[in-house]
Length: 144
Image (tube, rainbow, N blue to C red):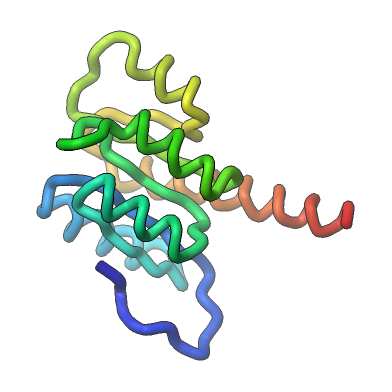
């Protein structure tokens, strides 16, 4: 699902939020929009929807649940990073089982968080991820 049609105004950030929890898919984008100026958030309720989004649009950051039907967030991260290798991925889970943090890191996740999410913390972490991405893009442009 997309926030709306493209506008002529430049967008500061395009985010993709992936979770099978409809309540989180409504609440977290509202948090991002209220705290990050120029933020456009696309949502996906399944890993397949997420892969379709990633194939269609570039994202500045991706936030994904780990436990979802069909494919877990670690496997999804690996697939998304094949398509958009420089996009930071933040993985979230309500299940803090051992080994998930290591698997998330090995998959190339920028960060790993457990639910319930602290809105201020996730926004701060997202800002760090976006800043790192912008810095990488600037360095890449400077070397070309």
